[in-house]
Image (cartoon, rainbow, N blue to C red; front, side, top):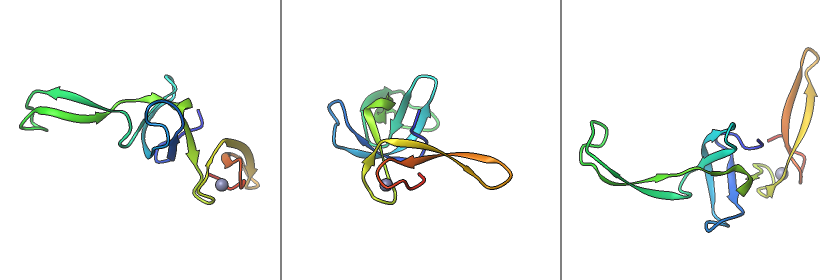
Length: 105
Ligand SMILES: [Zn+2]
């Protein structure tokens, strides 16, 4: 999976196509992610210690990770993610790169 927590992503499929958001959570084993403000569902909750009133709470539901593109911090473009191995002399570090400007994501 090419998406990690705190990435900015663009939704490219589904009814929220074109929206952008920050990744709040990733589920690599399911290939799903939760994006802030995207795919909100209404939950009817009972009062609890956390939410003393209960009622209807809007919450993000997960979406498929293949429905988003990562937005590059440097060029600001939604991009495919490349992979590159860097070496600091002692060890090899695998990083993600922007397919458009080659910046390390
Ligand atoms: Zn870029």
